[in-house]
Length: 423
Image (cartoon, rainbow, N blue to C red):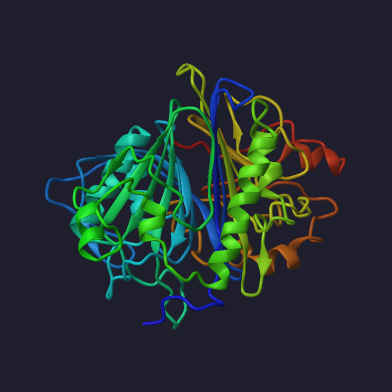
């Protein structure tokens, strides 16, 4: 099985800021998802659900036991698989995952993808810590494995995760079924396709150290540095590049300590010099997400997603913006048409020539529709109609006030918008 070569794509960057690093009393989460450049990454809403006892759930490759109740989630996911690259749930839990390779061999055969684990944790966890423990439990029971790319040549890896809620964040790094986790209660943290947890381990697999000792990776004496013990001795070129991105991301966060906002995170996700916003060979930044999770539970969580490639590019084709009853005004950064999503979705409208946002299970939305991918960004960028404005769509719709104003098009006086369930 082809697992990783020197030319294997190895990208994704996750960030989190907690007070006092944040400029406001909130946890701020961000991720760039770097995937095959022609892969469709869609944004979907999955409502909360109840499930019959003993029911089973089909994930990307395997079935797992379903739980009685699942939370409502918004996901940014490659359209061909069940899981997600990043997302948030109704309780304000956000998760992003990253590829990583370790001394522990990648499992042969199909199991749960890291993206499946991410979605399962969002649907079942009400806090970041609970979501982290859910992932480790699923890892122990089902393992992780299977190709993470819709391509004849398999592309397999282990996963790291950044999990955040209103009060704290967790970094979870895995090597097969083994894992280590680090709790983040203040300051800023980032991940970039490498093990980063050293000796500061908050929780770990009960056999982590004994396994390392049995393999001859650790002598059993002195400090146990997870990253040092489990990282590959000889890193491929792409992994070395990930180290440079990790250092650059950490420096960008440090430069804005105490002043980090959603706009700050958006700027970091746009940074091309560091490679955080990447376009290399067959891979590119295909989607981005920034979330603001206020510490005050009476305040709503807000999630911004691009639903389009390359967050550094201006919105030339009106990427969708969800208009929410508790979110007033336009996106804080008018240079990019980020989708904004919040706990209570009320009105969502669809832009002519834009991208599709679909409700999970909506048969009117074609999975893999070309309107989602990079080719559509190119082909649709000049397709704004001279006269016609947003039109009603059967299930989902979207519009961006900011972009309408920039194009000198008045907003319709009556909003023909589809209403949908509260998250």
